[in-house]
Amino acid sequence: MSNEIAVVVAGGPAPAPRALDAVPDGAAVIAADGGLAHAWTLGLEVDLLVGDLDSVSADDVATAESRGIPVERHPREKDATDVELALDAALARRPGRILVVASGGGRLDHLLSLLLLLGAEKYADVELDAWVGPARVHVIRGDRVVDGTPGELLTLVALHGPAEGVRTEGLVYPLAGETLEPGSSRGVSNLFAAERAVVSLERGVVLAKVDVDSNQRLALEYGIRGIPAVKAFRNGHVVAEFVGARAKEGVEAFLDELTKPPVADSVEDEELAGLLRAGDYEGAFRTLLGEIETRPESKDETRALMVQLFGARR
Image 1 (cartoon, rainbow, N blue to C red):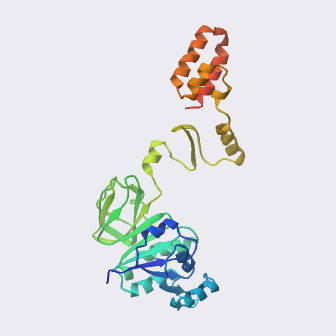
Image 2 (spheres, rainbow, N blue to C red):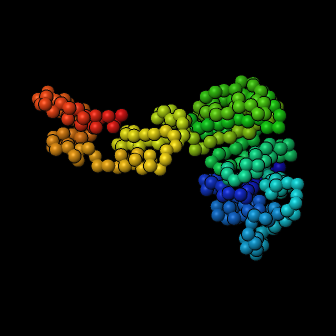
Image 3 (cartoon, rainbow, N blue to C red):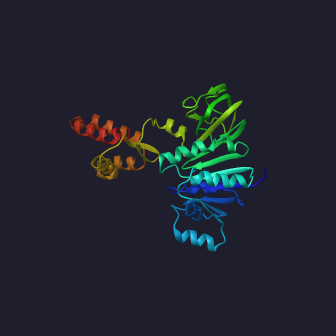
């Protein structure tokens, strides 16, 4: 094996643009069929096109050939997906590491096939990673260091048999010599406790998935336990919120309430309005209490204004 890094760009829906950050300069890029257009969109120079070419346009194939890019054609009726063929072509270059760039959407069978393929025994001698949609995926045999940030989700899943003697460091919920069985949820939704985690195992293969868009600390801070969770902020404070799907009319009513003129604009008392505009809600509250004491006849009206002002602020 060499120090070369090979990148396989899969077809299907377009991968996340941020995947480009994971592609090192000088890497050999192999496009799996429709992955040719994705690679070019990401600004990558393609070194090889592989597949049955049923999802890449004829114009793109012609452009590739005019640029001198080798094309490895396969029949449509074949025993492997285009991604597997591209992975095999990458492996033939004897790189030290292979990175697969793919979407997390599209056909479920293709996604499942890809994830299982990453753990295949024929790729055991090469370091194998993937960027799948918004997630980073690492294949672990023996031990590996996985980078992350505190609070990010990390899931460990055994592939093709039990993963025995699994140990972790740098995670909130450590594993100490445990066995992860295929189909078990034991390794799902762990959390980074530090910027690096070490995962080691005595036997087997583990797929480590890092959700780069997750932030558990933020969810905990604002009490988010369901999705969709919508929170409206004003001056750094939550002023309105709802959880769960709403009909169009419900969302419009929510936005109308948020965007109506501030209560301070309708207050006739200049002193009170000035306190509200300055954000001095304690002063405004004291002023209204004083209003109730000096003008008992306005108690109901003042109380309604207090509920309008301070009840909406939660």
